[in-house]
Image 1 (cartoon, rainbow, N blue to C red):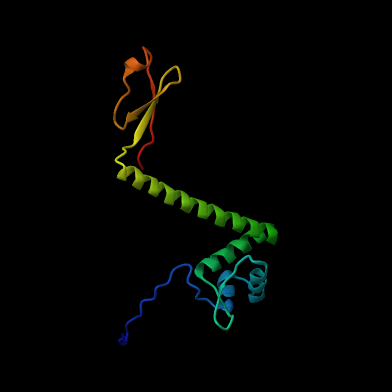
Image 2: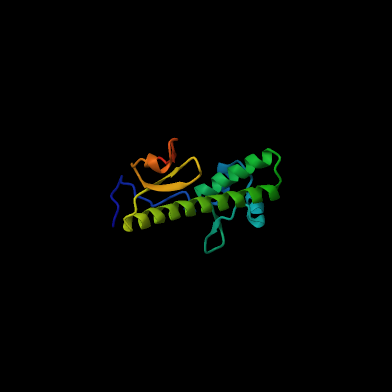
Length: 154
């Protein structure tokens, strides 16, 4: 579709879209381009490549470069920085997986018609499963009160 004069083309860009050449990325990160090349060689920040093998950095790459610079200024070695970045990536992947599995569990419970369950513990340690919103039958626990544990919705 032709673009009229004065109109902007909408670009589908996100934080992972490789748009910056090495000189721009280096300037945005406050580093020398040679430093970025070194970081690419050792695997700290690995930008995408063009067909001609030129590096293209994303906004996320630039943010990572800034984090590398901050950690380096705090006295962390490059090997330590690489390990920190690997662990952060791993934690992010695990958190995403937990969210996925939680959503899957909720869908499975909803499709099975299971309501949220509440458990009550009596003075002798016995556990009774209850439907959400229901109180335990005190006669099942004797004269003392039962402890009711629940997880608030949120």
